[in-house]
Each structure stands twice: as C-alpha cells, then as structure tokens.
Amino acid sequence: MNDEVTIVGRSGFLTGERVISARLGEHIRANPEPIAQHSLTALASISEDVAVVAETVALADRILTRRRSECWMRHLHLTIPVWEVAAFTSAATASLEDTLAFLTGDNWTFEFSQRGSRPMRQDYLPLTDTKPRYIVPYSGGLDSFAQARLLEGIHGFDSLLRVNAGTLQSGVAGAPLLSIPRRFHAGHPRELTYRTRPFVYFSIAAIAAATLEVEAIVVGENGQGALGPSFARFGNEWPFRSTHPGFIHRLQGFLTQLFQKNVRFDQPQLWRTKGEVLGELKDRNLLDGWEGTTSCSARPLQRHGNHGCGICGGCILRQTAVHAAGLVPANRTSFNLSSESLTLRSSTGHETSMTANERDIISHSCLSMDRFATLPLRCSVLAREVTDLPVAGAAGLVSRLSGKHSQEWNSMIASLPRDAWISRQFLSE
Image 1 (tube, helix red, strand yellow):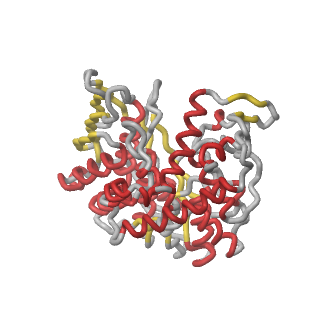
Image 2: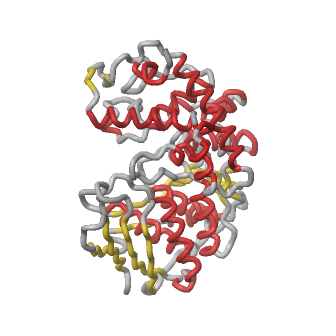
Image 3: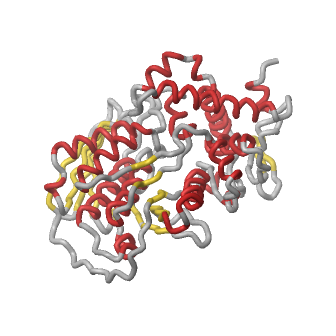
C-alpha cells in the first residue's frame, strides 16, 4: 500500500536539497471522520484526499526552515498518495500551486500518486433533515465569534455550524461546534512563520461545506486583518495573507475543481473595520461572550499568564476596535497601552522590561497599524496592492477602509495619556 509522502525542499541559495519522508497515519494524521458522523453520511474519498493534502502542506511548511538572511522563498516539491488521483488534473494542480505561492511566497510543485485500497467506511443512518446553511471556520477569536453571532441573529441559531481544526480552540457554550482532530509530526526546529495555517483550516471547512452541501463558508475576518498586512511589508518578509481575498479567491477555485461542485467563500466583513463589526454586535445586543474570545497571536507561555500579550498585531487591533465601539476593555493583557515605558506586567503583578524581540514585536505591530492608516498618502503602494484584489472598484473600497481605520487608530491614540509610549511615537507635538 502506498501511504508515504515525500517532501523535497530547498531554502535559500546556498543550501542543498533536503528530502523528508512521512507516513500517513503515523507522521500525518488527517481525520475528517467527525464530519461524516455529524452529517450522518459516508465521507467521500476526495474529502479525505483534501485533508491529506492540507496536512502534508502544513508538514512541509513547518519542517523546512527559511534562511531569511538569503531570501524568503523556499522551493518545495511534494509527492502525495491520494485515492482520487484522476481528480488532481494538471489544471487543479496548477491552481493549488498558485494558491500556495500567493499565500506563502514560496515555490510549490506537486505530484500525486495512487494511494492503496480504500478502508471500509461506515454508512450513517440519517436521523434528521435539519442541516446548516453556513459553515463558519471558528478559531475562538473575536472575528469568528462576531460573524457567528451575526449569522445567528439574522438567520437563526441553527443556520450555521462552527468548524475548527485541532484541539486548541474552544467554542461558545451551547453553540454547535464541530472539532476536527489533526496532527503532524514536524520535529524541531520548526519554521515559525507557518503561513499555510489558513490553507489547512479553510480546507477542513470546505470538506464540511461540500459534505453538508451548505450555501457558503463564511469568513468573518475584518478588513484591517485581511488587507492591512499587505500594505505594510517589512524587509524581505512576504505579506501575511491569511484571509486576503486574493488567496480566498484562488483557494475557492482550486477546491471547486477538486470537489466538482461550487465551494463558495463569503467575506461579509471585508470592507469594514473590526470596530465597526464590534459596534454592530453592540447595536444588536449580541455582545454576550465577546470578552472570552482571544485575539492574541502569541503563544500562551508568551502572555505572562494574561489573556493576551498586548503587543502583537492582534492585541493592538483588538484594543483599537474596543475603543471605537465604545466598550470598556477588560485589563487582561501583559502590556497596558497607557504605559510610559515598554514594561510587561504578569498576571501576578510582576513587572519586567520587554526583551529585544518583544520590543520589535510592538514596534512592528504599531507601524503596521500606522502604515495602513496613512495608505491614501502612499499612492504607489495602493496601486500595486489593489491589482491582487479580485473586486471591482477595489481602490475606492480600500481607500474608504483605510480612512475609517485611520479615524479609529488616531482616536485610540488620542485617548491615551500624552506621556504613554505609543502616544510619544505617533502624536505630533
């Protein structure tokens, strides 16, 4: 039985090729079976192939570290055994390679071989005709929480199914949440940029969408998070495009080819700020539970025992949105925006000065926010980036979004003490 994937990779100009083999079920375990159990139907072989491709891509991304001093791009060639090998046509493969290149900035190539005999699959007896209209990829963050609450408020509690991949996220008490186990063994050191994470999560959501035949996969990311990083590039780093509409559009095309049915992604909050979305939740009386969400991108051990680090891009944007919506933030972050110095406070009250890496993180986060706020003044950047947006009138939409973001960002800064560290960086004398 052919159940071994091969990854051939090279990072930088001076390194040789590295060849890695991994066995399905041992080093890679993609298990979308809970989707079949939830939908009470046997899972299509192509769905399991999609899960295997997603996990293999994640493994390759994590196991081959970048050589940032030479260049960002890596060259990765993956050979993957699949059951429905005929579905991976040259057009579908080219679409997959283009999707991942846009997302990660790497050069991806693929070969697909025939996997061994299919395992016996259990047929589930249908017990109900009720099924959701929408799938919401659910991370436990404020954006996915807000999108789920808005859909429930408009279409009803049973209109959607939250889907997450992995075991680190948690759902809202009483809300339907389908958790898909996943694991791959990458060893150490691991590549920390891990840009393929959204490819994995959205692929799992697409399996659920195709199996349940829902209307759409609804991605709740706000416009600042989806587009802002593309307009604030740093050094040779590839822009962060986890929910960029250019990536979503490419992924939708690839998955539609593979499933041979329309896999639709919607981004209803793309042209709104996080503050506007949070404000709508407030107006609709749907805020209950929002403080339990997490917007921090730092690992739990890097939060000093707090709910968030307070210095990453997610934390800075969240606090800006909370101010814009007129809410009272819970003081559960390691860094207080009113602080005069770059000092972190643990949950037990112990104060420490930021490390060089932490100072770099907060500087990067704040500069990203400020660069998106001043986007209309940088016409060449605006013109370059809107070419990647598959939307008519993109320049005007981005300019409006940037203007609203600028209002919220500057209002938040103006609300801080004049001697606060952030105020000293961005307020004019």
